[in-house]
Structures are given as C-alpha cells and as structure tokens.
Image 1 (cartoon, one colour):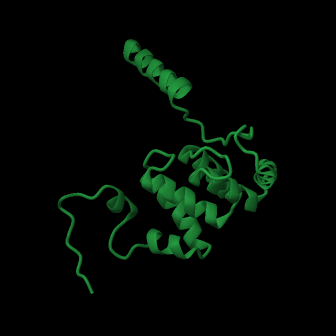
Image 2 (tube, helix red, strand yellow; image 1 turned 90 degrees about the horizontal axis):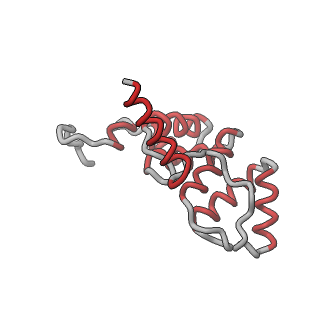
Length: 153
C-alpha cells in the first residue's frame, strides 16, 4: 500500500512539477516576444484584474497573437481568472475549455458548472450548450454507442 502511494506521488510530482504544468494560475510575467505597446498595456491591466484586459490577453494566447505564444493552457488560465471574477464571457470560455479539452482536462462537471453560470447570466452560446434539449453535457462529451437516435426537424 505504501509503495503504491509513493509511486503515485512520484508520478504526480514528475508530471505536475516538470514536464506538464498543472497550475491554473496565469503566468504573471509578460512573454519577451510581446513587443506591441497595446498588448503590453492589456497584459499589465489583466494582472490588476481588469476584466476586459483579461479577456483580451486570453484571446491573444488562444490565437497566438501580438507576440504571445499560442497556448491553450495559458488562455484557459486567464479565462479561469476572469470567470472567477464573475465575467460571463470568461465563464462561457472556461466551460468550453473543460468541455473541449483545450488547456484543461475534460471535466463534464466543471464544464457544466461554468456553462450553467454563464447561461444564468444570459450568455446565448452557454444557453444553447448548458440546456441542450437532447443531451446532457456528459452525454455530449462521452457519447455512448447506445445513445438514442434523435429525430431531425
């Protein structure tokens, strides 16, 4: 039993401490490759919890724009930060990140939680996904071969 726990701990330490980052905290140091003055300004404001700037920086990471390296993990980290501050668009985006495995491990519960929050605040995309008339979030993420066929209109 002790050996299994130590092996598991070592495995987690190896992957979370070195090769793969398990952090959900956005990097607070602007990448050296960013030279655009407006992008640097947005990054500084995002570090100070300015919601609009958080969304902008997340989108820069998502697209790899203005010198930001393309990183789904960093985009998700920034969207997570915005979502936790109550921004509806960030809540929608982090829900999608969990749903589509973009910078996050697939997690139906987390995806549903964030998408339902965004839907409750009126986000149209979140409303379509969070309250899908035919499938639950779990069924959309992990379709089974025994799923009932849907009628088409």
